Length: 195
Figure 1 (cartoon, rainbow, N blue to C red):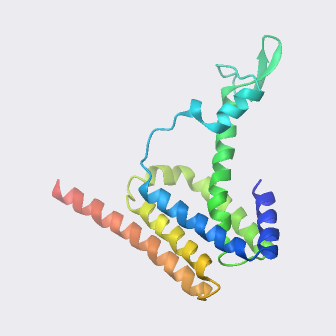
Figure 2 (cartoon, rainbow, N blue to C red):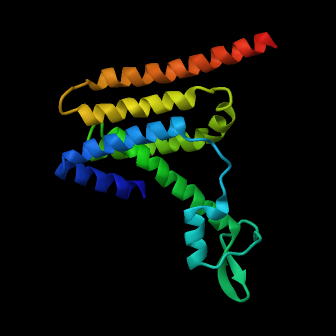
């Protein structure tokens, strides 16, 4: 799925210069959404992917071990585990919509874009559970990541007028993330001392 998106993105960016500006605007919008969107408990029954899957496939109400497909009244049907897989993959697609345009701010070489995304997937998938537990300790990381997206979006929108070298861009990204983590740790440490 990401491979098709990367290939399509590279081809479109090569043909249409203005697309980088559109992707930059998309990243700016994503950054603002991260900062200003209120966190709420997701309603999985109203999720578009779940509703789409339920519309075209019968889904059982109970698990059948670790199977994705089972029999329901003599017919093939998806299990709730298959719905979980659909949700995970659509979530990956949503993350790709942010991460793939961001790499275009650095390069349009399809090999580098593809391999960087492969390494990101390998690293994030293995670190997901660590991040899920650690995120509560890094309260400003979300803000830091939104500032990174904002910076990259602005860089993409203005790259025709202002050239920011790649090492400088990477330095800014590292500085923003390190600052957000440091601020989180210091705030957490100060909160423990006050107790």
